[in-house]
Image 1 (cartoon, one colour):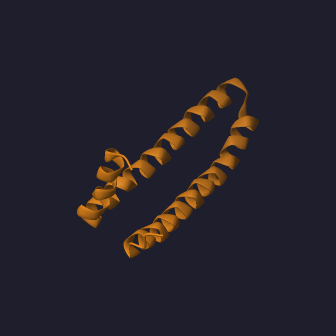
Image 2: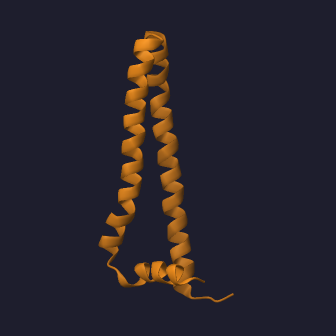
Image 3: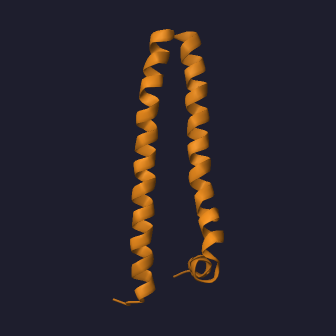
Length: 93
């Protein structure tokens, strides 16, 4: 285990839960923000270049993409809880 890994794992032991939650939630929020901006810009270009039917298709797909992102975040959050519990047990097997 490198020194960087040790310092990163200590972050989770010595920081407050609220501070850690905010730190880790920001990356998810930024990801969703950039995805939304990308979809809006894509919609503008598609609407101007290809037409209204293509723009309608993009608007129909956008909620599906958001659901996929939400499910991914849900799985990641659930997995992090399970990993945290296992790390908290300090079972060195």
